[in-house]
Length: 281
Length: 354
Image (cartoon, rainbow over all chains, first blue to last red; front, side, top):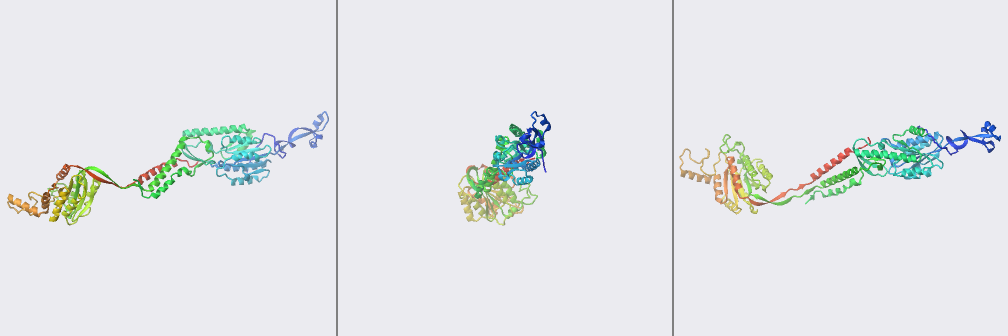
């Protein structure tokens, strides 16, 4: 099973024990301060030295913060462009990533939730926050059957915030970010309450200008429009600039909302995520 | 005016907008076209390819309908004489001039050819030398076989002359009948220029008195000039003058000292009994322009051509028939060219990523 490591740099608010630094006092190793025994603290953590040091000779008890579980949400763009077959199959990457994430999250003791959106939020694919280990298998199967087709856009992503947990969660937003201008900005703003990790799924075909010359007959996966591109040097230069410009704009937008995006340009591998979180720490 | 052999195929023209309406099959699916640079040259090329496809489909549809310009007649003013070629196709024309060694009467190295071949060559050259004249052709044996109506088209004339020596001639010769047929050619034609009957024959034949009378009337009424190219072979008598024909022609007594009177009498007798001489005399007496050429050498032919050329060249009205013209090959060619262009574009097209 694919597995990756992730961590957060904020304190988890939940009371469920888990793997992240939390705010809840409890059975942890992270010392947060002292309390008076008479205030109802756990007598097993009685601190003799602190009590002796107390000029008022009161019983001091050590207080620790427990490590808590967080909800992890995979928010997936299920628009038609996510099923485009370039050098790699994007949808295969999505399925693999979803399965790896469900597995890693449950291994970490966190809650996993899946929200998929095309024109609307896909209720049939919605997975509420769960500890269930089998969820990863289940999800992989359902995603396999739900390969996007037709000309669906990703407009439903803007409603996705209502389907996320109330408390701050780690949200992986996977998309190709081929959205109309301003859409990404609007989407990230709607998810402001959460820690959003943008996972940008691009294909080498999209990030590199095609080699050679000739004619390219392209069809937009979402609008269905046709376009003939006459590949020649002038066009290729413009194209290269367009790719660089789009990447730059996306980086800036995401950084304004707190996180550097992880750009997956080749086939997905879980280690990419691990490296991303190590680098971010 | 334009007409169609299968007009129903024009319904297929309705398919012409298909390239504009139907998306091209099997494009490469692309995530977001808005990302690509806008290139007007590409857009124009796309439009041009669609137009080419539409035009090609239209061309095929119209070509399938079989468009043609129907047969049309047009009137044209030409200048020259109207000539009926009257060619003898009797059996005797299939024979040769005479002993192979004798070039005296043929006047030509090609003595080995049959008389028909030589006659064919003679009138072929004659008509080729007179491109402005209108020709008609009649072959004759015991009947007259019209092979060509009046036309100025050299190709037709030469083809008719070439066709004249196909197969073998018939046994009989009815020169009177042939002359009547040639003369009647002019009967219902407006007089527009000099009229000539060019008789090519190797011999004559008797003509009955009634026919002679009719020929006289006919040729006078129609104002026809008669030219006779007499293909004289080794044993044939001359048309006029002293009978100094080769030995074997029984005209004069052997070894006799012939006086001028005797000579004259012999000639008159020959004129009455030998068909060629008789014909020559008859033609001379009709009262129409007449000339006989003894085709013994090329010079005689040149003389004939020059004589006809001296005739006044009146403007003549010609009715030309333009044949039906089929336009579909041109359209098919256009469609093929355009389709080749499309195929080339298809060849340049990338079918897959790398």
